[in-house]
Length: 256
Image 1 (cartoon, rainbow, N blue to C red):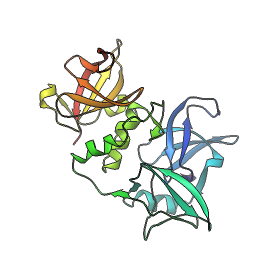
Image 2: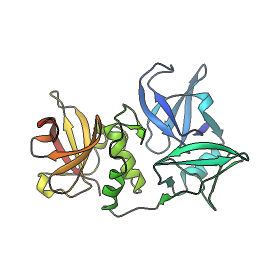
Image 3: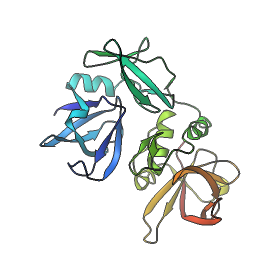
Image 4: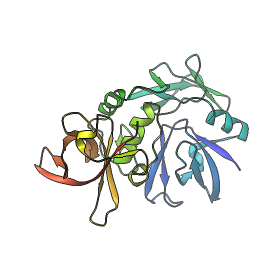
């Protein structure tokens, strides 16, 4: 089975092999994956981090050997900790890079992919962080525009936001809100929760459609229009601008 790695800041992961298809997620620089199928110039992939699947354009990735893929998968993740920075390579070329991108086998300010050495002199996250760091990291995304399938400070959706905040702190969440709701320990009351826990919200059919990160004093940070802070009560999210409830609370989960 062939393997690959993203070599651009972020690329669209689409539902079907078409440029106009729904973007279900994004693949960030340095993320590796298995290639499970191909149609024309499109590759069907399965991400190594969360096993999420979709289609990407073959021009936006580089192939890896099985040995290289296993080496990346078995080494600790080192992630970009700056909102926006750049990589320099090939004696003067630059590549924009954003918060949460991976730096495979990063050492001495360099990450190497397929014999190309990328220089990065910014901040990094590595190893697991205390739970309280989750909130500091979440605040880095404040006012990021909502983007269905997004995972970057240029655009992010609700579950992409929670997944990236946890990932930057060294912990793994699945990609979609409904998948994340299967993780962790359910709490009975908001009063049992602490900052960093996740709150999930459902629709009239009982389907989990939204997730956010609980803050102190009955507040929540979540992606809805933009990454914002609102009030949280036993009914759900109370929007501080419109003064109405926007999401119905289903369950609170303690992940850490």
